[in-house]
Length: 191
Image (cartoon, rainbow, N blue to C red; front, side):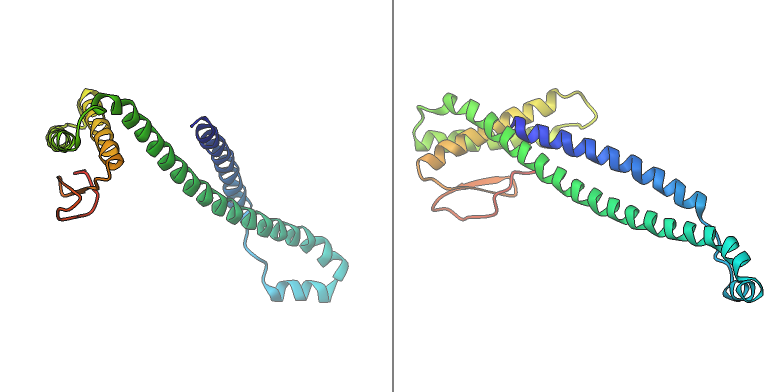
């Protein structure tokens, strides 16, 4: 878990540094954006006096070369930022799964001594409580509702772990629960 947190923090720091570099490059590109000289003007200048034309257009050429380098770097930064965003999503997802698993493991002791039928009854009761809490929770209120929902979900996951140890398949479908031998649906808690 600490390795995942460290990786997430490292990715966020790299993301922050790249965003700062991207912003600076974007400002530089906008500031140094200039109109290209007309081809006929350049040719005419070279026909009249090639040394003077080189002196006049060499800085323009150098600025365009630098502009192209900056554009390329900006593109590379954009690709890396996209990769970092994807990695962060994956790491956050993994961290949440591990946290959820650890929370469920903490509650398995509460239900350890129950037989299969008692566990099924607990699962149905906990799912009903989860659905009721989730349905009536207000996202604008304090975190006590969210904590109650997470606590109920952790207990439900603990019961599911114990049922799987007894070779009972647990499936969720649209806020209902079924066990092996019954109609099976997708595993989804009412979210």
